[in-house]
Image: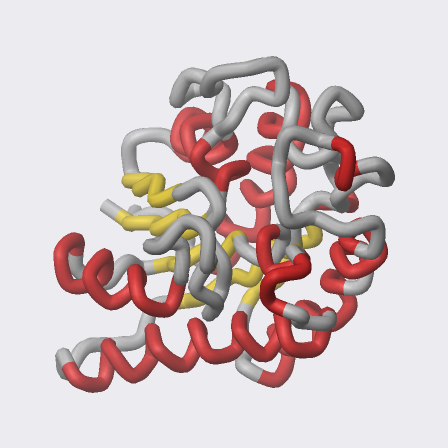
Length: 213
């Protein structure tokens, strides 16, 4: 069985923009599990507010680079790690531009490979998933910390992630090319968007990580 780790934020966790949380088989990791079938094990590790490398001063425990080692050691190295982060890095707390956010993703890539080397195991494939765009008006949403410049920052991430993926020999997928955030809360996705992301990832994963014959 091929294992796929989905390491992300609230859109991996599946926050419903209308309240609550989408069920597992509505969230994109769950949709991906259904599409891939029983020869793959999709592991969902989404956490609300998670960033690449920054610690949220108002809600500790959101720093991705601190959380990832424990997840890798607890669950073992996957065959594929999907890194689905960047939206929360656009908050004003971090004063990070798109280049700095992309550098954070690069650090996560290197951490995964360093962990594999320490464990004397083959490094997993890594896929950088650029987030759906934050929508205009996010500063008026219930989610604190976003200034009016957050949408522009989020739109700048995909081309930089794509370049980083080439430099780090990673796979790449732009979620915003397939889906969008809900106008309802400017940040999270409706069920149709989750499905679109899973469908977009499917051929990439099957080509890079074909099932055992």
